[in-house]
View (tube, rainbow, N blue to C red):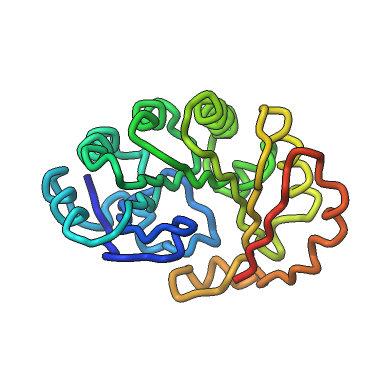
Length: 231
């Protein structure tokens, strides 16, 4: 598995739980606003054995693990890594994914406690926003259904990028979640300019104001609680 970096302890990646964070390298999407653009390439990071990764992750005094990227599910070894981490059954294991590889995700579910699930946009705009040739939404939808049919906590979220995402899309995603059988919190976080983005890619994007979403707040369907996380 290719690894970009490991953070010994984070207090912000899993609510209320200090975790060690593993950033896997490589992604199968190419979102222009990506905050970790330097690890999009599948040749980024360094190759590590599952045993070496586990050894580094378990050497920290935290209450769990967050596996993020990049996109962790592009690595077919992911379920094997999670299985080894699951041996410590008191530790919380969280995965960050955009859900485009449901077969690997399905094999990973028995070893997970929670999933941050990044819904990039509405179905008809996925190719445009993620800059891929074929629309991945059917696979994303399949992944959502797999999680909802499991015992893993499903935490959907969208990054609201000024100049790219529209308020009406947040409303539409909320309804999609209801249609798929989800009820609970849906997190919308604001896009923030950072050194991790590619300057030429984000020059037309804006850091949005929380007021941008006022027009839809009163129209979110019953069953979904919109959580605005402005950083």
